[in-house]
Image (cartoon, protein in one colour):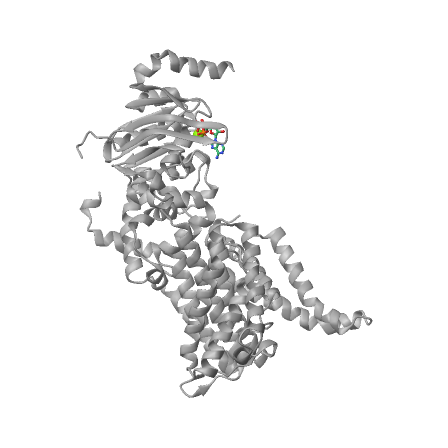
Length: 353
Length: 259
Ligand SMILES: Nc1ncnc2c1ncn2[C@@H]1O[C@H](COP(=O)(O)OP(=O)(O)OP(=O)(O)O)[C@@H](O)[C@H]1O
Ligand SMILES: [Mg+2]
């Protein structure tokens, strides 16, 4: 009986039950993994460091998309447009207002979030395919705006030369240094995404995804929570876009384009919609495949001597397309689901046959 | 308001779908802590009536008062916070969530954590989750759902999903519980178990229950009062034994079987 035990004891066991990481060795493993990532520039090749850096920045954008599409079920093809928004905001804040990067970055995230909110408004009226179409609008309106509005400030199609971040006198102008920034942002966004997923907010978002009418009749304000999802997704895109812009040191209306929006969605699908791990696994795998395509390019050119350089370039989308198709056919729930099955099998190891 | 005044009053509600009149001047009252069954042949308008109470359908005329408040003017997502919960004829669970999280999601209206608290989680949101987890665990125990606590509900068999849905409605701690055919698609044993749960809820909780059900035997056993709808009209109302003998009711049901 409940009365015989003090309530605190219950709470403790529920807290244990709810915890993501329960064992000390898991904390240690996680710590070591992070340490190995941060120490990468000390022992890994420059190309690996640069790869991890790019992956970290991309994962942030995919995590945002995961909140919106994975958890809330609102399909969006506008993620790259919000990356553009974030990139421009932090670049302009540094160039014209002289703000330090560490201030410009969160402001860029916030600004992108607010713009995302506006493009989320149609989600009250339309769903699915039609919503995807209306988010596509962002992908046309925002680059158009950047090309044509305030030419003195935004510099039209030319775009901006973006200053490198400077924190505590250290200039982050090489991948070996930039990695520390990207990873730090990624750690924060991963924790935040996880918190969102396991809290009242996350349950409301999934409720909307799975049964919007029941959710509404059981007290969830659909409009409010859909907008919060759009806001968060765009905040993540803003962070990612800003990180990329200050890394690439240049930004124009085409830096992040529709292809990137589609690519981000593909990464999420490959990794697993609506899972914490999905964005990480999916992004890394797709980036690896794209890398492979680049490496394989010259080989293909020697096998088919007639192929032009443009055909070699075309290998990247081809590889991406094939991988996406294979996943949709054979593992639509993505890598995260595979991973879960493998973990379960490992735990049941002695009995698994 | 005195104890005997109705919790819910449906006052001459009419609902049209184009030329179809789903509800025709329907009036009924739900009293505190009673089980009111609504029966009637297919298409009689039972579900439509619940949808009007949820303000998911807008009646073309009439009022629906809940503790004196006109529900037709309350947005659907605010209905739950007034203390009304329901289940659906075609189960409408959050299929991707576990049993536990389906019930936790129903605590939504009792929780306060906003965007910022959820993003930070540790502190307020965590404490709030712990607190509500205790309420939810009591319901899980009451409905004997411990073995499926962590199971994703989409994969559960029909009978269990119906039970989870009842649990989700209970987790709202409603004053009025609307159950739309909670026993359809169940075998006799499952039906009896469900009937027992409903009777236990009736006994232990301060809640009025509106029960839509086709199984006449069960309805007559557990309802305090019965309202009969046919073609959108209320054709009878009264205690079960009276309803059983009512010639109009017999005609409506026989008519349906012979059609
Ligand atoms: N959304 C809708 N659009 C058009 N007609 C509807 C709608 N919902 C219900 N109806 C019609 O209203 C009438 C009453 O339907 P309702 O679902 O309320 O019946 P019911 O008593 O719940 O039947 P059942 O026992 O089959 O569940 C039917 O004629 C139905 O076709
Ligand atoms: Mg019905």
